[in-house]
Length: 279
Image (cartoon, rainbow, N blue to C red; front, side, top):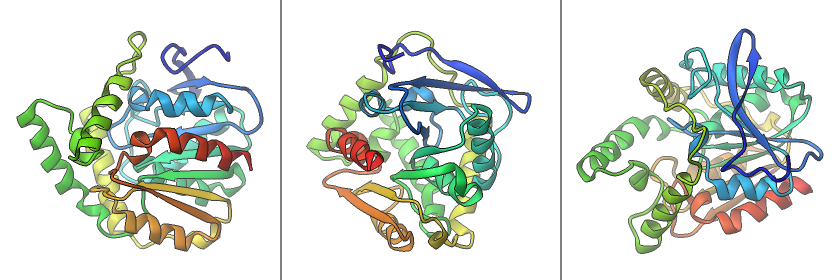
C-alpha cells in the first residue's frame, strides 16, 4: 500500500447502512488513522495531493465522500449534526474505534460534531479554515460565495481563486500551483458535486452560523487550529475564538494567505500536522 500516492490510489466503496460510501485509503498502516473531512462543494479530487501525500508518508490516511457527496449515494442532509452522524457511521463501518480527524472548512464543522457526538472515537483533531457553530459571520458565506461565483463566471475561472487565496502576487501564484496539483490525478476521478449537495451544504452552513454556540469546553482532545490571516470565508478571529474555547488547542495563523492558507503554506502545515499527531 505504501507505494500508492493520492494520484493513483484506487477509489473504494463500503456499504454504510445500505448506502455505498466512496473513499480512498493510503499511507503507512501504523497507529490511529487520520480521517479527512472536506470543504463546501468538494469531492475527493479537491484534496491537495501535497497535504494528503505529506501526511500519508507517516500515517494511514482515509479520505471519503460523506452522504450525498461525489460518488457516495444518498442525499446531503441540511445540518452539520446529521453530517457528523453520517461520518461516524462511515468510520464505524470501517471497523475503526479510534481516529484522528483533519477537517477543512465545512469539514472542520463536521469534525467538531463528531467530537461532540462520539468523543470516544476521536484522539486528536486538526481544524483548518474553520470556526465554531454560532460564530456569526459564517452565515455571510452565501453572499461571499455568490460574489466569488460571479467573479469566476466573468473571468472563466474557478471561484476558489477568489475564495481561497488573496489577490496578491504570492496568493495568485499559490492558487495557480494548487489548481495544477488538483489536476495531477487523471484516472478514476470522483463524480462532481451535485446541485442537491451544493444547496444542502450551503443551508447547513447558514443554519450553523445562526445556531446557538456549542459548549466546546467538553472537547478535551488536543486540537491544532490553522487558518490564513486574510480568510474571507471564515475570519481568523473566529478561529482564534474557537481556540480560546477549546481547553487543549494550539493556533497557527499563516501570513498573506486566505481560506486556503494550509494549501498555500503546505510546506509548513504538513510537518506541523505530522508532529502534532505524533505527540
